[in-house]
Length: 202
Image 1: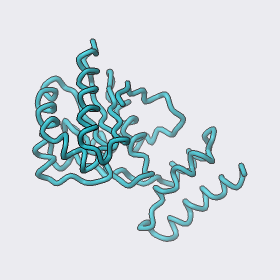
Image 2: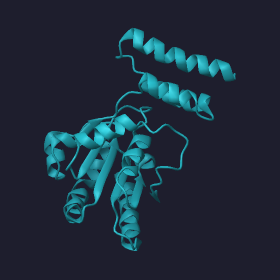
Image 3: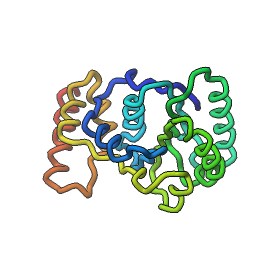
């Protein structure tokens, strides 16, 4: 449930331009709320953003508690214990896969928590599959600028993914990020690149 964020420890692309744009757009915000559909790589992107903010980070993974408000309170208590055990000043906390149900359970705790850590320079990154209301994000101490839609993979991203070890598995996981609302020619091109790579290793 709670772990140390290690941005350099996984086999993926760095999405340098995307990460730089997100950091620039949310400069000065205590929270980054990264939202998007399943398969867009929100969790990986959040870790990449965290990797550009030096210092120790903790991550709370909530994917097992999407519809269980009580269990998420236990997970939150574990995060608080991990924070109290950490001897170093935390640079940030990643709350991964927050659902509307778990947000309802944690809302008051998040407000109190953020007010206590913001003055220490601790950054919070939240990934979710929904967009918070402007009123809710303001209640958490941020402005609507803190809300960022996880961007789709670009052609360069797909090419970089294709060059990685285990590319077939990685591209298969990336396929949901190639969305139907994209222009048809663009979507077909990206899916074609994924398909060609998968066939080459079949």
